[in-house]
Length: 139
Ligand code: SF4
Image (cartoon, rainbow, N blue to C red):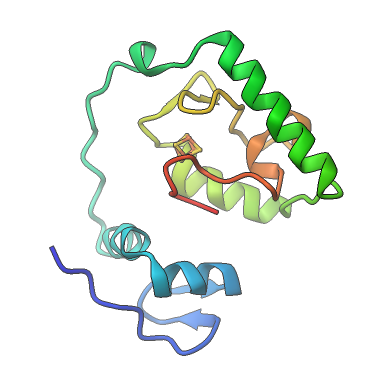
């Protein structure tokens, strides 16, 4: 299925998706068809088909989770502890992680990190501005 390209010329209000596009979102809209499809579906009221996966089977080991968490923390501290705003965290959580097929018990089963609305980056991967979704759903 072909997804129409982004028609905006700069960040700001987008009539197509009825939302404010930050420079980051504008860039994603310009370059990532998956995002446009997701936003088109949302605007048109189309719900994502639930994907049947065995979450327990996909979940990574505790050792790997700890290793990923350590790497994320080191990267975040080295970058000067940049954080996303609470609003941005809430938006990402509500739009992507909350209904994601890869979320299990408040964690992402692909990386093992906690994904929630917590304001502390130490307990929430979304809060760390150095982290992104392993599936590319958000950056
Ligand atoms: S980080 Fe990405 S893959 Fe993991 S739960 Fe969130 S949206 Fe899903």
